[in-house]
Length: 273
Image (cartoon, rainbow, N blue to C red):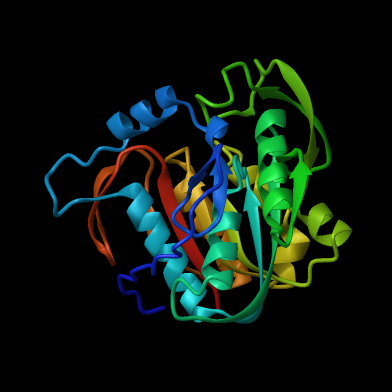
């Protein structure tokens, strides 16, 4: 894929009381993000070497926009570890408000989230704004079942809740193969993954989907440095080519969009050829 920096057009929409802008035309409730979370994100993701160094949010956005520019017709996105449904709302807004040049005619979103409050927020964001989407409560793993899920902090303060042996709640787990079959999904144009260390287990539960080449692009937030090469090798027999790879907490990285500071999550972008 040829990459270039893409500017978003302004959607020119004003949120109703109690809601805030996302930059993509659709809105999120004010309560989903506390001032504590906002302040911590500014500190954590602050660039460290001046204006020529981009942040990880900008880099992830640019890969997402470039992928969307290459798609056409009906598009499906599946967001694993959806939190507030950020990337589903982004895709819906880009398509419905024509925020970039694209050839997408329609879309369907599938958002999977294990933390109960985040799931309810995502569901509300979709339902209140008429997003063509399905919100699914559960965690992604290699098989169906249930797991301990760590969700002790205030949901508005934290977005790193995950499967964990010290988890305080029990939530269902689903394999990706199961969800693709259950919802009769014929293809996933964009698979966005932010599941806090369960990336490899997710792939182990997606073998049939991978065999059928149903997933075109993957954007995987990386939380364990040892997974980068492991995942690349796992996906190579299924026809995936790496478009970008950066380790978590890796700091300075060269990207197609300029130098970037990837201070927290790593990023793995793959395309099925």
